[in-house]
Image 1 (tube, rainbow, N blue to C red):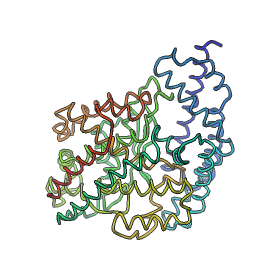
Image 2: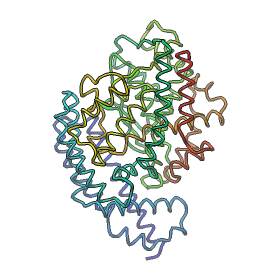
Image 3: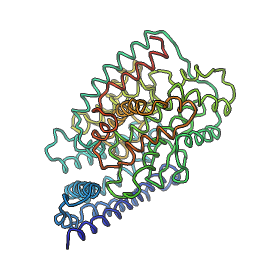
Image 4: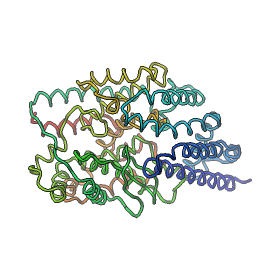
Amino acid sequence: MTQNEAYAALAAHLKTTGALEQVAGVMGWDQEVMMPPKGDAQRAEQMGALEQVLHARRGDERIGEWLAQIDSTQLDHAARVNVAEAQKAYDRARRVPSDLAEALARKTAAAMGIWAQARKDSDFSGFAPVLDEILTLKRREAEARHEGEAELYDVLLDDYEPGQSGAMIAEILGRLRNGLVDLRENILASGKIVKPLTGSFDADTQMALGTEIAKTFCYDFNAGRLDKSVHPFSSGNNGDSRITTRINPENPFDCLYSVIHEVGHAVYEQNMPAEHAMMPAGFYASMGVHESQSRLFENQIGRSREFCHHLFAKFSAAFGDQGLDAETFYATVNRVHPGFIRTESDEVFYNLHVLLRFDLERAMINGDLAVNDLEAAWNDRFAADFGQKVDRAANGVLQDVHWSVGLFGYFPTYALGNIYAACLFEAMQKALPDTKANIAKGLLAEPIGWLTKNIHRHGRMVPPVELITNATGRAPDERPLLAYLNAKFGDIYGF
């Protein structure tokens, strides 16, 4: 077999595997959005069976044979990325036993329903046993894949943020935390009180306005759809990139800003290079980069004074006069308060939420925290960082879906996403001087086009930190984020 034949065989194999991974994604979307409640057991079996097939494909001995016949230096850049990612996935699959991969898929599929019920009942004891089983399986996976990383947690972190380590992230988030604590104290010292929005807001009207906003942010409904779920999420790729939101009759911002956040993820996927669809080169760069798109959409654009003034007119037309003017509406959208729920948190407290989860999951994977002690550890940390006690488990340790589906190593990418987003927005405004003027008019094609050019179209062909550095002209750090937050909230709270 020639090198060209070996690469063609590898590419075909990778594309079919990518298609099957997308099938798994659609099944996961269906489970959270449309599947009848009694389908959990069947879906667990289906997901387990599919993961068994995927695991076998990733560890197929032919991949090793094809890779041995390929000289990457003779390939174009995209093909080299495909080969490198194939090698990485192959090595991982060969290290993780098939029965472990299948057990993880089955357990996490079954845990979804258990978590949802425990969250509904606000009873951590109903979820703790299955979480303990998932943790045990994830530790076994990390041990099987361990290749000299400093800690087990780094093995799992690499799935979401290649090139980073728990220690590196702890350092940058530690510096960010110091700045956030100072900002929080300045806001409290200002004495200014921003009242929350009150009233009851029709669910259908929320969804209709959410749909309109999604279109404003260039979401292509011919390549996606908007539905409701317990936990808002984005799922899919390229021509089928779906989003969900949730409805709170007393807080329409929960729905609207969840839509904007998930649209940021989905537009990234819709703008991926179509010529590399279902291939490694056409995947996202990292979850931190992915999160940078959703947070930039949601915060730097969506919560800006310019966009809030634009949204105010549409909000008033949809829900009537709420006794607010545009500037008060802007302050209300950006109200700082130490709330329980991460996804509803303001920009000042959000990263403190992420730091809490990062530290706890890192401790669990590294063997320093047992599941039976998790709820107490969560509540103690929350009281220390937020100045209030968790009132119930649904508002604390049970609020996020991530651990129920085995996503250990995922949470810190949210904070990295905020850091990347601030760096990108700073560079975008320098490149496009009319950015704020266009945002005020709801004209977002140009700034989103800048993101497509500098981020989306590159897929996985540029490493995460290099991608951000190329787009901004400097290595990413926390300083642009802290500068943005201090300027914004200093203005709102008058310090």
